[in-house]
Length: 187
Image 1 (spheres, rainbow, N blue to C red):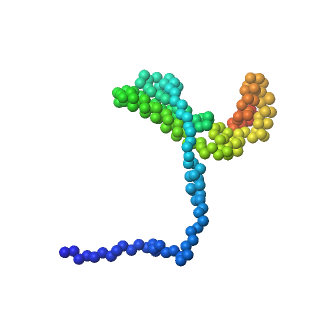
Image 2: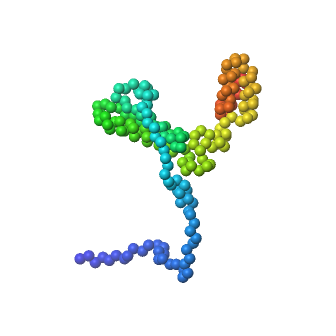
Image 3: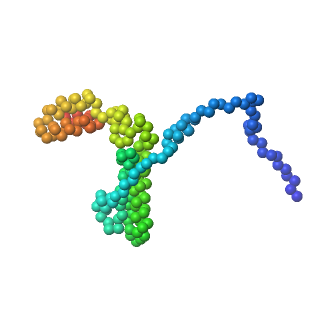
């Protein structure tokens, strides 16, 4: 016969529901997390365009290769490009599965690349593509001082074709590229 007794487990803290006599609920405020989540709710329309990936087919030169390229666009702007491939062979002998896996892989890759864009909410402050955030892009581009100094240095180049080529690249140079060009032309 077992005569052991157990005491009910006691938890620390006071878990009784004690409210003041006159309980007035606080005004309903939207929590910041809920507000951020609400920005991303809704229906987004994307267009996925699939094509045979000729570049991959030419690179691998394998008869059993199945390759797709998926271009994902949102409001007419490309936001992701993905590639998917599979090889039909002794291990993968089911054609329909191989094709489906390559097709799905391209779509998943495009969506995975698309998440790198900051905002899909369509707010007026956001934009897709290169130069989406002009302040951020301008922080990487060559400064006006670098460009004017480079213009002076490029003017001293004897070869006209090289001079024109460097002048055409001047507007798209990064700070780092401009610095390297200055060092090269100074010496």
